[in-house]
View 1: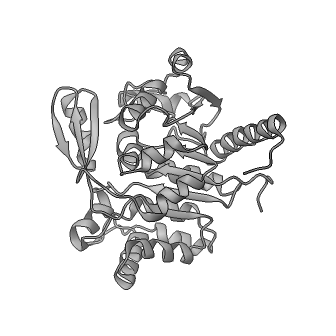
View 2: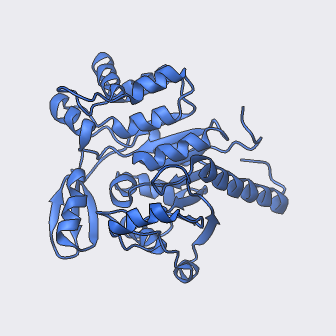
View 3: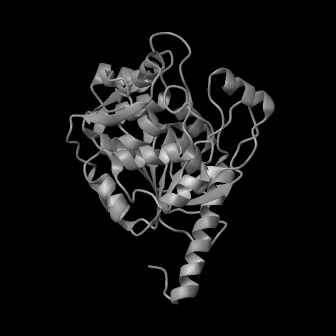
Length: 337
């Protein structure tokens, strides 16, 4: 049962574990959820299926489907199970089920839709495109690399910042429902997740960034708790935002949600050994750019990783949206659009 009567249509854009973590929390507050997921992944189990079967990468979509699942726990466990040996080592059952459905229905979109029905998901999960795409990255020293899974290691090798990422082919069309969902959104959430390889690739698909910029929805970027090795080691919060604007244009976000919670010392030490620390919030740059900060304790204090807590993150987003919605009603007297 939803805890609040206000249930806005939220569109979440990204990929990786960050997006699925947020979705797991948001589904407790609203059924009106649409996840738009990157299709640039070419590593791990998804990369093997791309190579062997010529299909689109299912991994990030699978994570989102499982996060939104309302099916029996055994079905969710089945989708997450990974083989530990043999030729299927590292591959997940969920990926294979989606691959089978892709073969049965002859459509990747239909495969994802039917997988969602099997898991009885809350909301919808959409691939941002159904074209076969690759990522291309240029670094500040002039080096270039092709392939999402190679960007992190190439950045470490060249020891410089990522200058720009792009998609191959250059013109990539969105899935039909993607632009429609963005147009209907009352809130658009970018992230959390890998800045260059999970979030920005979605905004490079034709029409997506334009639709987000033109939307009247609240546009929120959820900044990562920690820097990411191979992408954003020394990035401040505004450096993340600056990269989004550079790739998708001014007006791509209105708000940035940042973590103010503390990281356990033992956990922090592990990250510092890898050359990354908590993302610094450079408030003055946000004020100058006219982008408002939303500050909250978002950290998960369980385990040995510094990540967002699904419940805290969702509650921070919903509290902000409820307050914004209430303020609009009090100011204008208008009903919810």
